[in-house]
Structures are given as structure tokens and as C-alpha cells.
Image 1 (cartoon, rainbow, N blue to C red):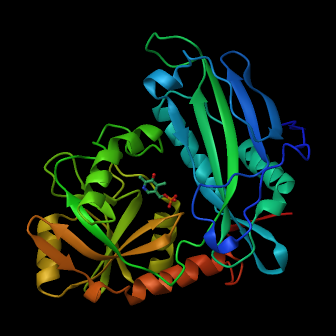
Image 2 (image 1 turned 45 degrees about the vertical axis):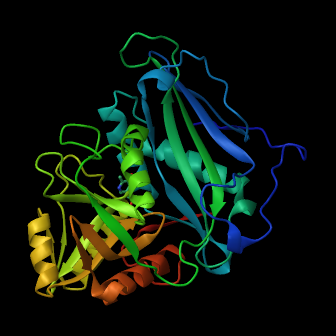
Length: 357
Ligand SMILES: *Cc1c(COP(=O)(O)O)cnc(C)c1O
């Protein structure tokens, strides 16, 4: 794949954030972006890196009307000695192809997607923050660009990658969140878009998250559409429970996003010799486990936070307090292990780290 590169002029360069301790998430964007177009019959073409700027779209572009959009989220970490590390990036692009298939969008060869990210990171290397916990967030996205209001898959697409520096998720160590168990709305139903990383899933989730915030909770626990009993995900993360001496996460049954962090947690905890199961788990079992003291930890997993401990779960009239509202040992150990591998500080025995030279 040939990538044409047009560098930003000094006037096109973007204001760099001064202070790495107040980066936040998704507020700053780097100088350049990667673009590539697709047309049925021609395939992918016109791969280029250009200065970051607004896109120009026909107002009838199909993405604007029927939501044919998918995305990915991964991070570039500045490791020891200034090396730039990506964490399992091929998993993100394999998943993007699964999402693409579900939304009738074209496949992108994983090698080409990796070449695009690598080229972009080389150009915007100076945007990767250096302090521990910070990183360069990478957002590959695909949208349907063909103009037309007939409902069918678009014949034209744009694939783009934007990046931007993001802050440490935890300024003061792992901070447990308070979660409201959602019984009215669902994120996804089996057979729907739940296992695809599509913007549409996020649109479906906003109202419940807004209501939870208004009631004093950080996020919601999503239950299955059929029966509102089985646990599926927490906010925009996969969920794990430490019950007795076992660790449990719901199986990938169609409505759950197959997280890269989820897969990494399963691999590591199995390696640690823990009793790990991917099985259905319902609110009745959770309530019982909380009552008899067997429920030791609950945590979410995702690229943004890595591990996000849950301190309390509100279910109907009850508040289930987990580990006294403090992060547990398994959460802490997993956070240290995975972020240590991501920053190149812990030996990468799984070959997960991809260095950008
Ligand atoms: C992206 C995402 C996750 C986490 O996936 P990672 O690959 O671990 O970042 C979990 N749930 C949902 C709904 C997501 O969109």
C-alpha cells in the first residue's frame, strides 16, 4: 500500500496541550490523520496522511441517515527509552473486520491497517505524551459515504484514523465506580449489533447512562434483552466477577463486545492458575453471592481504563457493596500487570507488544 504524505504547514499545526496532567479523554487531536477511500469495483484506494481537518461529506451520505459506521479504539504508549508501543493492535483490526461484516462494510487487510497506523504514528510521534499513564489514543473509523436515501449498503466508504493525547485514567490510583443495574433499557439484543463496535450501540446506550448519572451513579450494568436477568457488560466495558476463588465473565454470546482487554485478562488469570469461567451469570446469583460474602470483586475491562473496579451495585432497592467499596487484590494485580506490559516495563511473555520503529 502506497501512502501519500502531506505534512501540516506551521499554520495548520494544532495547539499542543501544555500540561500532561490535564489531558482528559478525547479533547485534543494530533496534527495529522490517515484517510483511505473505497468504491465497489475499485476496492481501497487513495491512501494518504494529511493535516487534521474537517471532512467534507454529501448531506445524503448514507452514514448520516442509516448509521453505517464502525470504529476501533487502541492506544500508543511511550515505553522505556522513548520507544512507541502498541498493545495487540492486530486484534483491533481483526475485530474491525468482524464489525464490518455485520454492517455490510468492506474488509481491510489487517496488514494494511497496521501499516496505516504505523505510518501515522511515525508522523505524529511528537504527540505521544511521556508521563506514565498517559498515551496517544487511536481512533480508526469507517463510514458509508455514498449519497443516496435508498436503504441498502453503501457502495462507497471512507476509512480514517485520528489520534490524540489522553491523560491517565487514574490520577490517584484505581478508583471504584458506582453502578446502577439497568432494567428498562438494553444496550443490545442477541442478533443485533452488540458484538460489533458500531456507533449505533453507543447511541442506544446514552439515555440509560444519562439517567444513571442523574441518580448519582457513574454508569449502568447492562442486562440481557431477554429477561433482564443475565449480566452482559458494564457501561462501555466488559465485566468480571471474583466469586469465592473463581473468576467469572459472561460468554461471548452475540450481544457482548469481544474486548481485547477481556481476552488479555482471561489469558493472564488462567496463567496465574486461577479458576476462570466464561459462563452466564444472573442477578439472582450475584445477589446471593453478595449476601453470603462470596462476591469479592467486580471490575470492568477496556482500553480506556484497563481495569475499572466496581465499588457498589444498585439493584432495585438494594445497594450491593463490593469489597467495602475499595479496589480488590485481583483488580490491582491485573492493572499492574497489563499496564506494565503496555509500557514495556514488564516482560512481554505473550508477544502482545508491537513496537513502532
Ligand atoms: C470497546 C468496547 C469494550 C472494550 O474493548 P477493549 O478492546 O478491551 O477496549 C467493551 N465493551 C464495549 C461495548 C465496547 O465498545
